[in-house]
Image 1 (cartoon, rainbow, N blue to C red):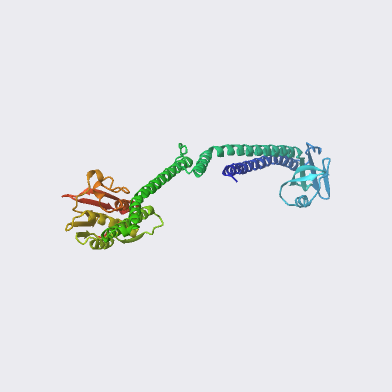
Image 2: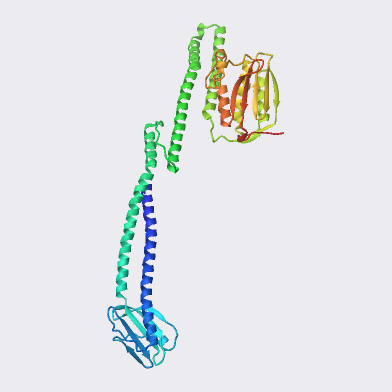
Length: 437
């Protein structure tokens, strides 16, 4: 069952309940009012007869009343004798109460009042034919049924129109989603405007489409860049392999150089593929987040950097810091920062590593980063002119930025006072970073 049909049925059912309740209330109120008028008239007649037993009888007819007096061993009726049942006998035998009731007499629907009398009589019964009330109530029932059916029909039509108008944005969203599914193109947008939940839904849908379009475009650029970067080492390796096929023509020194080149290119391929896999992971919500000591993680990475760059001095000042995040990704980011600093530092120089107030600062004493390169060093596959002669894939600092953003932080490159480069990795305290005193 479609949502539109369900809304229409809900509107019809609600109106049916409301109109039905109102109709029943109207009917019973009117019935009570008509019976109350008859009872008032019959009671007035009974009181007059109680006061004056010689009150003139009126004949029993379709529009008249019938009066019956009961006495010890006798009864007197104005034209027609009414059936005597237990109620009349009880009042005639001395029960001091007045009873109003409806009954049938010779096929006529009548309303009676039974009241006690003083001597020489014991009870009086006054009855009136109420066929006219039954006729009025029957007409009222018909009118209420027709009004109810008309109200329900009008409510169903109005509900269908309202549902159609209200669900128009949903239909547009559905049509857009179906077209995107068919074409695979998320550039389409649905009209926005107005207030309420459905316009907000359209806005959220367009925002989702924009994010999807950006993700697809990022993926396309990533694949294109990765293909371009992988082509160079693969081409070089293929060339060296072709040369090695003719190794009998090469002297041992040339063969050694070719094997060294192949080994270097294999290492570059390994690093490049590792960097690509790291970037492809992105901010995967399935990655486990734990709470750990970030300063201890940095200290471990510094020890690895000392082994990797034995000719450098690492000056470390780490403030105890606890962080909630993905430890292996942050370890990779810290390593990339230290590896970048070590790669640009001259033998015998120092690298300063400082952690305080949730910010990790890595400063080297190398040539620094040119002003025109600082805005791009964190872009994927970007390599400054001075770095193109050095090994690397151009993904190290891009991974640092990805990890920083995944943890609600930032990374920036600056010129260090006195020369060299200063890279700042700031982690957002709202995402779990705090410093122990």
